[in-house]
Amino acid sequence: LYQFEHHAHMSNRPEIPEDSTPAGYFDRLSKDRVNRSTIPKMSGLNAIVQFEITDDGNRIWNIIVENGVLREITKEMIEKPTCTFKLSSATFLSIFRSEMTLQQAFFKGKMDIKGDVLLARRMNNLVNLM
Image (cartoon, rainbow, N blue to C red; front, side, top):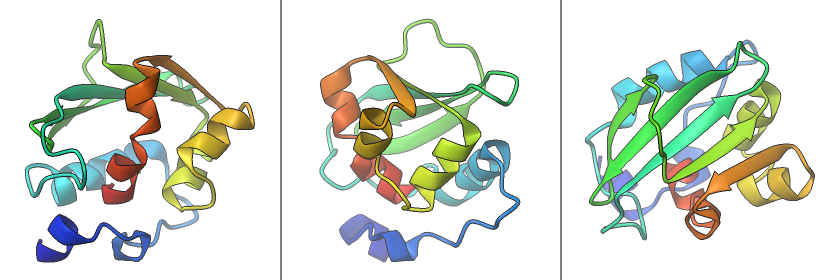
């Protein structure tokens, strides 16, 4: 717990197996990270960050952040998320394996962003924690 409060380095994230899916990743994330600690540099943040995986039957996950803490991960349909990342499962896993950043995925045309784009640009801190 201590290391995540102070240093959310990529190396702290468990290795993602080759056969991983976004669903498996979010399920494990729910157990490992929810309600544990404040996201670095986001202490006052309240947001609903939606990931829409386009090639897996359009599956959606919402990451609910309250006061800078990852509170909940839900598959419920939320009408107005703060920001949405729309991407393929391959792009999703590349980002979480640290093979590319959110910005690189966006600028390569591999991901669409809807909603609060300024907030979306700060999401690397959230991704690093995940």
